[in-house]
Image (cartoon, rainbow, N blue to C red):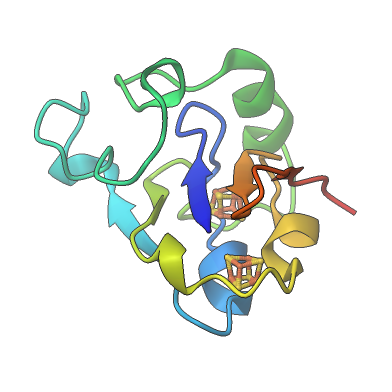
Length: 117
Ligand code: SF4
Ligand code: SF4
């Protein structure tokens, strides 16, 4: 199983790491790697066009940064799929992902994308 996060859309909500039963995700501080050049945030299988380069997707940022229920950590962290091989495709993360930015590809090549419910 291959798992990756579109870092430009990840809000840092940590729902994925909270619900994943097999610890696929780790939250990383943007402050550790502000422009992605240190390889801290882009250390998973995220393709180049979705990697963190210091800029959030403006639409996702506008939607969630104005959410009155946002937690204070929003947009201060990014989720990194450090252990994608362990994924059991329970799909819990896919329905909890605010940024709709998770992709999972199974061994047959079928892609699954997060849709926030
Ligand atoms: S689908 Fe995979 S990555 Fe997502 S919560 Fe379940 S085991 Fe974790
Ligand atoms: S649930 Fe989605 S938006 Fe929230 S931290 Fe995980 S990948 Fe990012």
